[in-house]
Amino acid sequence: MRMHECDVLVVGSGGAGLRAAVAAAEAGAKVIVATKGTPGACGTTYTAASDWMAFGAAFGHADEADSPREHWIDIMVKGGLLCTPELARAIAEDAPARFQELEDWGADFDKTEDGRFVQILSDGARYPRACGRGADTGPIIVRTLMERCREISRTGPGSVEFLPRTMIVDVAVDGGTVRGAWGLGMENDEPVAIATPAVVLAGGGAGEMFALNVFPMGATGDGYAAALRAGCPLVNFEFVQIGPSIVHPIHFALSGVFWRMHPKITNVLGEEFIPRYIPEGVDIEQAIFIKGVSYPFTIRNASKWVDVAVFSEISQGRGTEHRGVFMGLAHLDDRTIEQDACVPFEHLLKSGLDLRTDAVEFAPAVQHFNGGARIDIAGRTCIAGLLAAGENAGGQHGADRPGGNALADSQVFGRRAGEAAAEVDGAGDAEFVRSFAESGLAALQPAAGGEDVDAILSAMAWEMWKGGTVVRTAESLAQAALAAEVASERLKSASGSQRRLAEARNMALLGRCVALPASMREESRGTHYRADCDAVNDPQWQRQIELRLEGDEIVAEVQPLIELSGELSGLEKKLEG
Image (cartoon, rainbow, N blue to C red):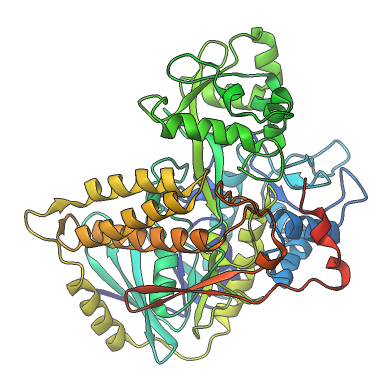
């Protein structure tokens, strides 16, 4: 077993993980970043693709009426008033400084001729505040932070070391305090143990839990599961963002411009099916058009029916072999496509898709988890020495989030968690971690001749998508929960690598963590659509649901009503529309 020691272990090398590593190293800490991929070329921040990867920051460059206060209000309203107010406010207030910081470190974002940042309107925002550089925003952020890690390691005061191709399985906790963590090599199952007093969970979401998703490989929710097993609660975990995305041959978010170009949308039978699902009184063209500013599925406007239609066609068997439907722009002239959709046109052309002639296959795909391990304003959890940032953290987002807030969140709470981690007193315990790891390894022994782990996961992932994404009912959620429970049992006698068995165990656990609070929440709010419940934004459900693990049982606790006062008074009236 390989042994390491450090002041701070960061799990994940996406935007949040790298920003945490930078902050901790700047504070003088010896940092190890464990990542399942290749540092600088993995994670959702790096791999996610759309025509505009947004970083939401209220500079007011496009509209002087915008401000961090207005951003905070938008976060709360788009979040269905289920955000923890002080966490949402931290994102709004810190985002401009974090974005400017990236540019100061060498990031090259789009600017106007007078030196202001280009800002566009994104979903859930009343003012244009989405900054970046088209589809390159995420990779630019990752490259910038990687270089910053290298610079600090060269000049001090701290250092950043990487453990590539390594999955962190669990955090070693003794008496409510972190002593270290252990993991496995991605290819060879080689065990590794890290003695450290501070762990920052920033490993991203659990996209692989759903058959249709736009996450990179390896997004199996390890941080969430490790937090639960360490004794930390998850919050808002029923809220999963789902957006229309190309599912073959690449992943690419179909946002913005596509929906404003009057696309032709057909099922595998060639039928333009959306009219079948549009209720009387809803303008079909308008519903399709406003998908351009409502990329993730939301109950807040008529774009909802477009997602419901596409989901229903696929789940009822009228999708393609890749479980998608078709969107085509070939009825438009080439010049219109080349000019009006220039960013996605050029990006997709490099992947062999020509929008002038080819229809793309798309589906409602899971693209972000709004819930996670409950944190405080510094990114700390209730376990001493355990912190979370980015998608692994919970409370800063609610039932939905404005476009651009995921990247902003990664930098705001990445920095805060990294700084707080560097302040943790004490040291790791190598012997305790080694013993803890040996016990964990013993529980992950594959069964000779057992059922293949990937076959088990494939069956669960399709049921999770059908039962737990766009259209939810008590029956569909029960089926999703059952699929996760069955998978858990089947995994006890499965074959495969220890690393893959650990990932599968995590996803089966988290499948139940999505289905349970979603079944309890008998209303529709944000990304959560209960087709069998009449209630929408029920004032009595202005509450977060917290999940804890007690043995093998997931225990859900409904929290007190979120009280809005001061600047947030009266926001309940803004939830509609």
